[in-house]
Amino acid sequence: PAVCAARLPDAQADDLLSTVDALLPDGEPGEGIIAHHSARCAMEVALLDLITRQGDRSLADLLPPRMGQVQYSGAVTGGSVDRALKHAQMMKTMGFAHMKVKVGGEDTLVRVARIRDQVGPEMGIRLDANEAWSPDEAIQALADLAALNIEAIEQPVHRRDTNALPRIREASAVPVMVDESLITPQDATELIA
Image (cartoon, rainbow, N blue to C red):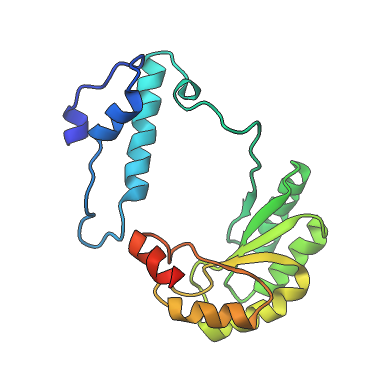
């Protein structure tokens, strides 16, 4: 409500970014919310888009690029193995060098093996289990998948099961990444410890 009632800043203002930042709520998230960063980011992007479009100004004017190019990776979401193969082929055709494949179901090994066969050994493949496995299931799955040249596994176990991550990391040649386990600064401190 506070954002909707606010007067939007002029798109030509030199301090547009800090003005938009001041419009957005800050502080602790509400009950049942781990962190509100994603919602705040969505509001910030929407406001900046609205303001810069109204003022016929590019966001690049405010945030000039720091790199000449950016490398994107594709994502193969859930669904059937055939659907995953179609997405993987699309990404290969479009020239992606890396992709992330959602895994965690009973078809994980078949899904990843068929994708690897389709895209070849050159394409980097990262996996994202989205908290689907127990620690023992993660260790077994990664042992089964290791021969497929997997770059990393993202969030193999539940976000709060951070004590299992070192055991999984030690038991597997596949590097382990967190996602859902790293939301707050406190999460970062606990994961580093």
